[in-house]
Length: 219
Image 1: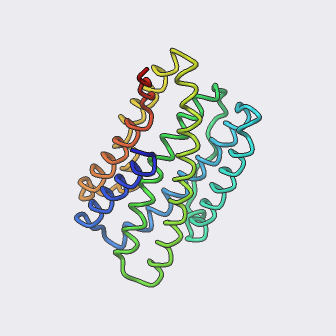
Image 2: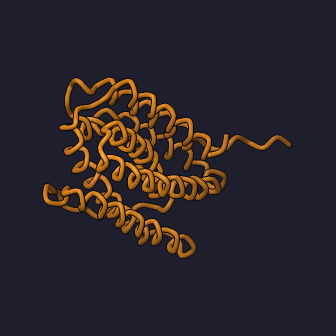
Protein backbone atom coordinates (compact mmCIF):
# COMPACT_ATOMS: atom_id res chain seq x y z
CA UNK A 1 0.00 0.00 0.00
CA UNK A 2 1.11 3.55 -0.67
CA UNK A 3 1.35 6.20 2.02
CA UNK A 4 -1.80 7.82 0.63
CA UNK A 5 -3.65 4.51 0.77
CA UNK A 6 -2.75 4.08 4.42
CA UNK A 7 -3.97 7.63 5.11
CA UNK A 8 -7.21 6.94 3.23
CA UNK A 9 -7.82 3.85 5.37
CA UNK A 10 -7.19 5.82 8.55
CA UNK A 11 -9.54 8.60 7.41
CA UNK A 12 -12.28 6.04 6.75
CA UNK A 13 -11.79 4.54 10.22
CA UNK A 14 -11.97 7.98 11.83
CA UNK A 15 -15.12 8.87 9.84
CA UNK A 16 -16.76 5.71 11.16
CA UNK A 17 -15.83 6.56 14.74
CA UNK A 18 -17.23 10.09 14.37
CA UNK A 19 -20.47 8.73 12.92
CA UNK A 20 -21.10 6.30 15.77
CA UNK A 21 -19.79 8.49 18.62
CA UNK A 22 -21.26 11.99 18.24
CA UNK A 23 -20.19 14.81 20.53
CA UNK A 24 -22.10 17.70 22.07
CA UNK A 25 -21.78 21.20 20.54
CA UNK A 26 -20.13 22.29 23.78
CA UNK A 27 -17.22 19.92 23.05
CA UNK A 28 -16.21 21.84 19.91
CA UNK A 29 -14.92 24.96 21.71
CA UNK A 30 -12.25 23.15 23.77
CA UNK A 31 -11.25 21.27 20.62
CA UNK A 32 -10.30 24.53 18.89
CA UNK A 33 -8.06 25.50 21.80
CA UNK A 34 -6.40 22.07 21.82
CA UNK A 35 -5.70 22.25 18.10
CA UNK A 36 -4.30 25.77 18.42
CA UNK A 37 -1.90 24.52 21.07
CA UNK A 38 -0.89 21.43 19.06
CA UNK A 39 -0.21 23.42 15.89
CA UNK A 40 1.73 26.07 17.82
CA UNK A 41 3.96 23.34 19.27
CA UNK A 42 4.34 21.82 15.80
CA UNK A 43 5.49 25.19 14.50
CA UNK A 44 8.14 25.37 17.25
CA UNK A 45 9.31 21.81 16.51
CA UNK A 46 9.79 22.55 12.82
CA UNK A 47 11.85 25.63 13.64
CA UNK A 48 14.09 23.47 15.82
CA UNK A 49 14.33 20.76 13.15
CA UNK A 50 15.36 23.30 10.52
CA UNK A 51 18.38 24.24 12.60
CA UNK A 52 19.64 20.62 12.51
CA UNK A 53 18.47 19.53 9.04
CA UNK A 54 20.79 19.28 6.05
CA UNK A 55 20.68 22.17 3.61
CA UNK A 56 18.81 20.14 1.02
CA UNK A 57 15.79 19.69 3.32
CA UNK A 58 15.50 23.19 4.73
CA UNK A 59 13.49 24.74 1.92
CA UNK A 60 10.80 22.06 2.24
CA UNK A 61 10.78 22.40 6.01
CA UNK A 62 10.38 26.15 5.53
CA UNK A 63 7.29 25.43 3.40
CA UNK A 64 5.99 23.13 6.13
CA UNK A 65 6.59 25.89 8.66
CA UNK A 66 4.47 28.26 6.58
CA UNK A 67 1.72 25.64 6.51
CA UNK A 68 1.82 25.27 10.30
CA UNK A 69 1.66 29.04 10.76
CA UNK A 70 -1.42 29.10 8.55
CA UNK A 71 -2.96 26.31 10.61
CA UNK A 72 -2.32 28.21 13.83
CA UNK A 73 -3.99 31.25 12.31
CA UNK A 74 -7.12 29.23 11.45
CA UNK A 75 -7.68 28.27 15.08
CA UNK A 76 -6.70 31.73 16.30
CA UNK A 77 -9.49 33.11 14.12
CA UNK A 78 -11.87 30.82 16.01
CA UNK A 79 -10.90 32.52 19.26
CA UNK A 80 -8.53 29.84 20.51
CA UNK A 81 -5.55 32.20 20.84
CA UNK A 82 -7.33 34.21 23.51
CA UNK A 83 -7.38 31.10 25.70
CA UNK A 84 -3.75 30.12 25.12
CA UNK A 85 -1.78 29.68 28.35
CA UNK A 86 1.35 27.88 27.14
CA UNK A 87 4.80 28.87 25.99
CA UNK A 88 7.20 27.37 23.46
CA UNK A 89 8.86 24.06 24.39
CA UNK A 90 12.51 24.07 25.49
CA UNK A 91 15.04 23.99 22.66
CA UNK A 92 16.59 20.52 22.28
CA UNK A 93 19.24 19.48 19.78
CA UNK A 94 18.57 16.19 17.96
CA UNK A 95 19.94 14.44 14.86
CA UNK A 96 17.88 15.12 11.71
CA UNK A 97 16.52 11.57 11.57
CA UNK A 98 15.16 11.87 15.10
CA UNK A 99 13.48 15.16 14.20
CA UNK A 100 11.95 13.61 11.09
CA UNK A 101 10.58 10.73 13.17
CA UNK A 102 9.09 13.03 15.79
CA UNK A 103 7.59 15.29 13.15
CA UNK A 104 6.20 12.29 11.25
CA UNK A 105 4.39 10.69 14.19
CA UNK A 106 2.89 14.04 15.15
CA UNK A 107 1.78 14.67 11.55
CA UNK A 108 0.14 11.24 11.47
CA UNK A 109 -1.72 12.00 14.68
CA UNK A 110 -2.62 15.44 13.40
CA UNK A 111 -4.01 14.02 10.18
CA UNK A 112 -6.37 11.69 12.04
CA UNK A 113 -7.38 14.37 14.50
CA UNK A 114 -8.11 16.86 11.72
CA UNK A 115 -10.21 14.24 9.97
CA UNK A 116 -12.04 13.78 13.27
CA UNK A 117 -12.59 17.51 13.74
CA UNK A 118 -13.82 18.00 10.18
CA UNK A 119 -16.31 15.17 10.62
CA UNK A 120 -17.55 16.52 13.93
CA UNK A 121 -18.02 19.98 12.41
CA UNK A 122 -19.91 18.54 9.45
CA UNK A 123 -22.18 16.61 11.80
CA UNK A 124 -22.84 19.89 13.61
CA UNK A 125 -25.03 20.85 10.65
CA UNK A 126 -24.64 24.64 10.83
CA UNK A 127 -23.33 26.86 8.00
CA UNK A 128 -20.49 27.96 10.26
CA UNK A 129 -19.67 24.32 11.01
CA UNK A 130 -19.57 23.51 7.29
CA UNK A 131 -17.22 26.42 6.55
CA UNK A 132 -14.92 25.44 9.39
CA UNK A 133 -14.96 21.81 8.30
CA UNK A 134 -13.81 22.86 4.82
CA UNK A 135 -10.91 24.81 6.37
CA UNK A 136 -9.94 21.76 8.43
CA UNK A 137 -10.08 19.50 5.36
CA UNK A 138 -7.54 21.80 3.70
CA UNK A 139 -5.28 21.43 6.75
CA UNK A 140 -5.59 17.63 6.53
CA UNK A 141 -4.51 17.84 2.89
CA UNK A 142 -1.38 19.72 4.01
CA UNK A 143 -0.71 16.95 6.52
CA UNK A 144 -0.78 14.39 3.72
CA UNK A 145 2.03 16.22 1.95
CA UNK A 146 4.05 16.54 5.15
CA UNK A 147 3.64 12.84 5.94
CA UNK A 148 4.75 11.74 2.47
CA UNK A 149 7.81 13.99 2.60
CA UNK A 150 8.94 12.95 6.08
CA UNK A 151 8.30 9.27 5.39
CA UNK A 152 10.43 9.57 2.28
CA UNK A 153 13.28 11.21 4.18
CA UNK A 154 13.37 8.35 6.68
CA UNK A 155 13.80 5.58 4.10
CA UNK A 156 17.49 6.14 3.21
CA UNK A 157 18.32 6.61 6.89
CA UNK A 158 16.96 3.13 7.63
CA UNK A 159 19.34 1.71 5.05
CA UNK A 160 22.40 3.77 6.03
CA UNK A 161 22.33 3.43 9.82
CA UNK A 162 21.84 0.03 11.45
CA UNK A 163 20.91 1.46 14.86
CA UNK A 164 18.44 3.96 13.41
CA UNK A 165 15.68 1.37 13.02
CA UNK A 166 15.75 0.63 16.75
CA UNK A 167 15.69 4.34 17.61
CA UNK A 168 12.70 4.97 15.38
CA UNK A 169 10.82 2.04 16.90
CA UNK A 170 11.61 3.32 20.38
CA UNK A 171 10.30 6.80 19.56
CA UNK A 172 7.22 5.45 17.81
CA UNK A 173 6.44 3.09 20.69
CA UNK A 174 6.70 5.89 23.21
CA UNK A 175 4.41 8.07 21.10
CA UNK A 176 1.79 5.32 20.78
CA UNK A 177 1.83 4.72 24.53
CA UNK A 178 1.02 8.40 25.06
CA UNK A 179 -1.94 8.51 22.69
CA UNK A 180 -4.59 8.10 25.38
CA UNK A 181 -3.29 11.16 27.22
CA UNK A 182 -3.01 13.09 23.95
CA UNK A 183 -6.58 12.32 22.93
CA UNK A 184 -7.84 13.25 26.40
CA UNK A 185 -6.47 16.76 25.86
CA UNK A 186 -8.76 17.08 22.85
CA UNK A 187 -11.82 15.20 24.16
CA UNK A 188 -11.66 15.37 27.97
CA UNK A 189 -15.20 14.28 28.89
CA UNK A 190 -15.31 10.67 30.20
CA UNK A 191 -18.32 9.99 27.98
CA UNK A 192 -16.12 10.51 24.91
CA UNK A 193 -13.77 7.64 25.81
CA UNK A 194 -15.02 5.40 22.93
CA UNK A 195 -14.32 8.12 20.36
CA UNK A 196 -10.91 8.82 21.90
CA UNK A 197 -10.03 5.13 21.80
CA UNK A 198 -11.17 4.64 18.21
CA UNK A 199 -9.21 7.61 16.86
CA UNK A 200 -6.17 6.67 18.96
CA UNK A 201 -6.26 3.19 17.46
CA UNK A 202 -6.34 4.65 13.93
CA UNK A 203 -3.34 6.82 14.79
CA UNK A 204 -1.44 3.89 16.34
CA UNK A 205 -1.98 1.78 13.23
CA UNK A 206 -0.59 4.56 11.03
CA UNK A 207 2.39 5.18 13.31
CA UNK A 208 3.29 1.51 13.58
CA UNK A 209 2.96 1.02 9.81
CA UNK A 210 4.68 4.16 8.51
CA UNK A 211 7.62 4.08 10.93
CA UNK A 212 8.44 0.45 10.11
CA UNK A 213 11.72 -0.02 8.21
CA UNK A 214 11.40 -0.88 4.52
CA UNK A 215 11.33 -4.56 3.68
CA UNK A 216 14.49 -5.91 2.06
CA UNK A 217 14.30 -6.07 -1.71
CA UNK A 218 14.47 -9.67 -2.98
CA UNK A 219 17.48 -10.40 -5.13
